[in-house]
Image (cartoon, rainbow, N blue to C red):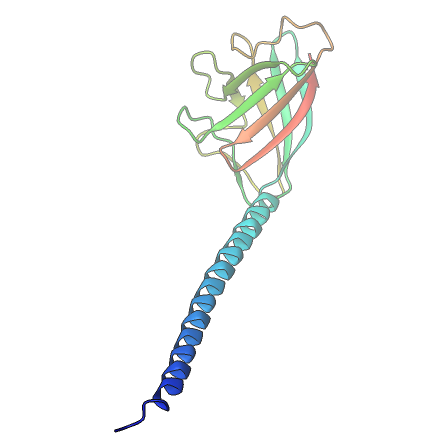
Length: 176
């Protein structure tokens, strides 16, 4: 008869080694997966930051003519990408949000001049862009639009935020 007492410790060692290798392999796979997810999130964050830096528009000044109800906004692109000044009716397009001095929303409107939207008389169009490191002016006719501010007292402070087709935003103030 053959003694089986010597085989049991060998089988136990082999089983322990197999379990150790399986646990190490599973841990390695899990750590690699977690690391790639964290790295992907960091890369996405970096990309968003660089996009924001590359597409920055400053609101320089604004002049409102109460007689003609025309607002002229002066903008400067300090980023490294061209910013669309699109007045198309379909999104994405340039829109703005206008608030009064009490931060109550007066209107949200596109620049296309259709319906009750404001009419961009100059400085924007379906293929118009604000080139990087350039300045421009946008002339908006507020008369007859849902953004008509003629009912406000003289020297009322208005705040506008402009959204450039999802590429960038800028905001500033003007007086009626």
